[in-house]
Amino acid sequence: MVIRKQTIDALKAQGIDIRWYPEKSYEDFFQRIWKKQYDFSYNYNKANVRGSKETEEGRTNVLFESFAELEKNSRRFADQTVERHCSPYEFDTLFVEYDGKIFCKKENVKSKEITEDYVLKLVWKNKKLYDGAFGAFTMQMQKICEKLGYGNYFCVYPTTYGIGIWLFWNWKVEEQANNVENILKSAGIEYYNEYSEHRWVYRFKISKKRENLQKIFNVAA
Image (cartoon, one colour):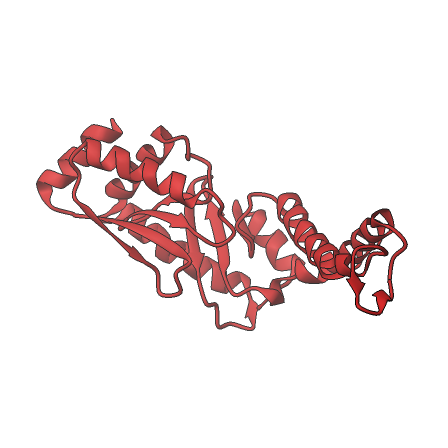
């Protein structure tokens, strides 16, 4: 997918943040991708460092004179390639945040270009859910997330079905899932778990029974 800078700027002027990466800031996203490219280069080439590999015929041909030279080359490789791997066309998930808390995520985006109109339709569709029958429920999910320390944390977020945990590049999934499970079980809240279609999200789908909703309001209070 393609997102033009003017589209991002136009939406930002309306209080809508749009991104194609899970991190809160582009700088954090950039650093993660840079580290990924650096590790790839370093691990791929380390067998070619002088003295690190021997054969029956003797020492192998070498690419670098030392590990210091290898590290220098790996940093140069990351510097040269990271910008391309931070481009929207490498991704197919769209993240939209507005009002500082309401968040919608569109997976498997089919549109070649993400326009302002496309995002606004997503926003207002999502806003109807928050303002409609399940709005109060979702706000309670937000409060539960805040109790767990995930108020402004992307990887654990409130939804109209309960709570979602983002799995991709999330190294704390087990800890986060245990935290959510513990607070729900301690309050006797009924729920079940499932994965999203492409297993990018681990879902806590909470029963909408009246007695269960009351327990949710109690624990979120």
